[in-house]
Amino acid sequence: MKRSRFLLRFVDVVLILLFGFIVISDIDEDSQIVLPSSSETERMEAGAEIVLFIGITSDGEYIDERENFLLPNEQSLKSHIQQHKDRFGDLAKVRIRANYDTQAHYAIRAAEICDEIEITKAIDVKITGS
Image (cartoon, rainbow, N blue to C red; front, side):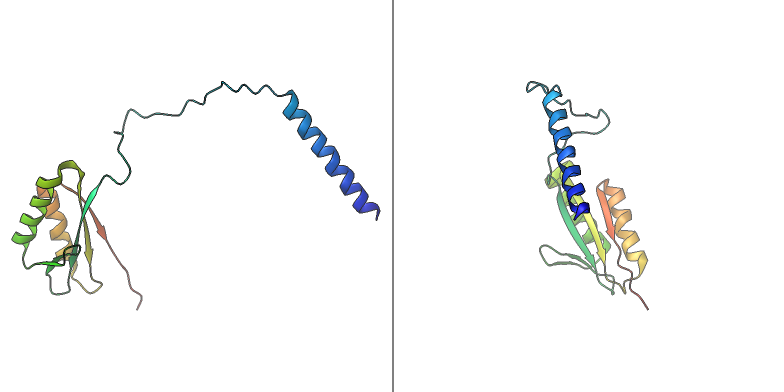
């Protein structure tokens, strides 16, 4: 019983101190917080990227995953990525997704094509357990 009374009194004292600090603190309603800014990066709206998803089958065929469009060879892949860049400019991005059983050189070649065209790319890698 004594322990619960001590705890209640302790809580009362803490609350009185808290409200006391709030009352005596100098809070100005007109104060503004200056947000940090960066001179290194350009300001960009969220979600302003237009991403082209390229899937790679285990046979080495490339697929536009959004339009379900087959790109049978590297030349057709290159022209498809170039069209994407010409259409959307700097907002265009490429995401390369290979099946777990796809040979790595197909994904690397797709990344090299993106480098040749000078378009931003990302490669999704899924590692499966044995």
